[in-house]
Length: 431
Image (tube, rainbow, N blue to C red; front, side):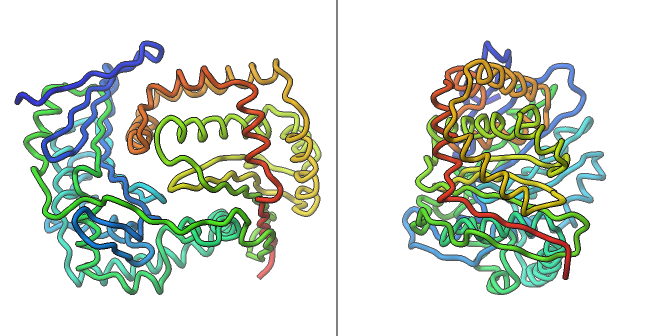
C-alpha cells in the first residue's frame, strides 16, 4: 500500500476496532474487522438528505432546489451505462440497496463472496453517474407512482401527518420523496449541480465491516476511488426559523383500515446538530422514552391489559438539522380513550420522580441492548457513518451512556414530553 497513514481506533469496553484513512480526495474510509463472520457489508454514504434543499457551495452562490431531489438522485444513480446496478450486483452474488433519509443517503451491498468485485462496483456506480433526460423522465414516472403508493400505507400517512402537524416551516415536514409537483421541476442540470455539491468526497464516507483483509481493502479503495471532483463541496445549509408552537394540535383522518391508529408527536427546536451534545440528546431521549413507554413499563402493561394498545405500540426519538421530535403510539381499538389516558399519564410522568432503582435497572438494560447490537453487522453498517457525519465516534457512546444520570433522564422527560408542543394524529376506518 502507499504511504497513506492508517489510524486505528479502538474501544476496550466493546472490544471493537476500526481502521480509518482520509484519502487525498477528502473521502473518509473505515474498516471494522470481524474475523470469522461469513457475510461482509459495505456502505457508501453522503451527508445529504431530503432537508438539504437550500445550500451554499464553497466559492459559489446560494442555491434552492426542488423538494425530493435527494431521493430522485438516489434513484437515478441506479441506472448505469451497463444496466441497472441491482442486476450487476446480483450477477456477483450480492444483495444491494439504497436509502434516502432526511439527512443522509446511503448505498450498500452485502456479500459472502466476491467482496472486492462488489466493492469496485459500489464505488464505480456512485462515482460515475450517467444523467440523461430520458432516464430522468423514466425515474420521474416511477417516483410519482411510489409517492401515490405511500398514500395507501396507514403507517406512512400517520407519520407524515404527525410531522406536518408538528412543524410549520422546517423541510422535515415535507415527504422525503417530495411531491408530484415538486419533482416535476427536477432536470439534468439540477441533478448534476446537487451531485457535484453533495457527492463531493469530502462530504462522503465509505464503511466496510466483516472478515476483510485490511491491506487488500485499503489498496482496493485507493485504486478504485476517484481522485477528485470538479466544483466545490457544500459549505453551508440553510433552514427556516421554526417556531416552538406546533402547526396543528390535532388531526383526524379516515382510511380503509381494520383498526384505528394514533400517534402523539412532541416537537423540539434548537437541537444541537453535531458532537457529543447531539448524541447525548438522542441517546438520553431514547432512554427516557423507553423508561416511560417501553414494553416492561407499568404504562405499557396497563394499557395492554385494558386492551387499549396492541403489540405495535412504541415510542421513538429522532433529531437532525436543528430540530427533534418524539413519537408515541400504535394501533388501538379505542383511539379517543387511549388519547385521554396518554394525556393523563404524561402529566404523571413529568411530575413524579423516577425511583432510583427503576432508573438503574432500565439504564443497565438499555446499555446491554446497545452492547449486543455490536454483534450485528447490519447495525454497524447502518450506524457507524451516521454517527461520524454528526461528529462522533460510535464506539464512544458506551462511555457516554455510562455517564447518564437519573437527573438527566428526568430533565429530558420534562423537556421532551411537553403538552404545549404536542400534536395528535388519529386514523380511523372509513373512506
